[in-house]
Length: 397
Image (tube, rainbow, N blue to C red; front, side, top):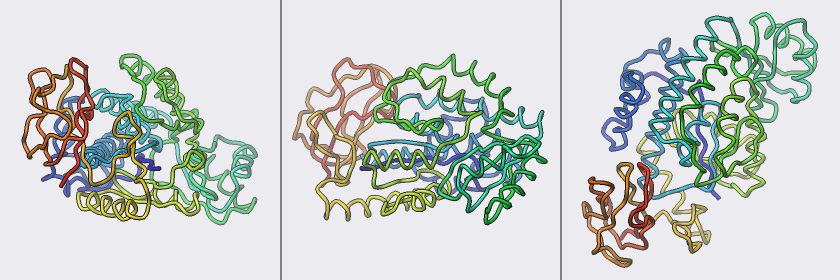
């Protein structure tokens, strides 16, 4: 069982988009720039560390690069059973599962980053990691002090992040050491995220969330605020607003994924922080980090090796008959949103060459980037499809 996980703010670094420039998935960068009215390419290629550290920049850059990485993986036909993202990464997970369209997600992430930046500028905040102390005792440390400090992230066993006023975080960190913490470490951020200090940002974000359509996810998405998988669209507006002032239950999310059968965790986007957390939390799990086009090839090789010793790769059923999509198979996805018209000459067992027309979405051709045998058509004539929705399932040669 395969889980895709997506990183949050803090995983960014200067020049992190350079390895993707020549890849077809890089086209998502210009789409993002058009959607939010900013040059995302500048953030991914030319912004320095100080510029990227700003919340309004780091969130947008990290999200878009995660989506570029996801798109590259999706082009191979690989699909997960579950999705989850850490803080900002939850938007990536929702986009990956089809709850949010890419353009809507870009706009929401841009608005979220701007709102959180303004809230942080208006009320100074700080964050620190507390290492080697049980969750309950970290909560106790925050409660004992005469100041503002709260738990912001439950990341992994013995790894908790606290946040609040700079004075409150220092006091709570000192109290945590008195209670047995091995170490406290200040984090290079300019705000107290996932605490009541973000209430103004939550109010602004609610307005933006109210303008967006949410759809039922194609796969369960585990929510940050309670680690419960959601399979409907109804609660996500509330959950995304609540997330800003609530602690990220990431350790609990990893436990929940494990209990639901996830055994392989693939982190998509910059950095490998979540992979390290998964290894620390779930004994015996497999973790893979995809940060470059080369990593996509390595991912397929690793899962192919797994498939040779296991009856299935753990990918999603490719159709309604319970068959699993193996890494020797590929999906042709829609290039745009609109009504689908299949190529009348296309049938199961048809052979496709690279560039053959599978059908049309509105007036735009859907061409196969792969050569192979058609195993099934996954969209019906007249069905309204979204951009990058699977259309045809191929077995490559």
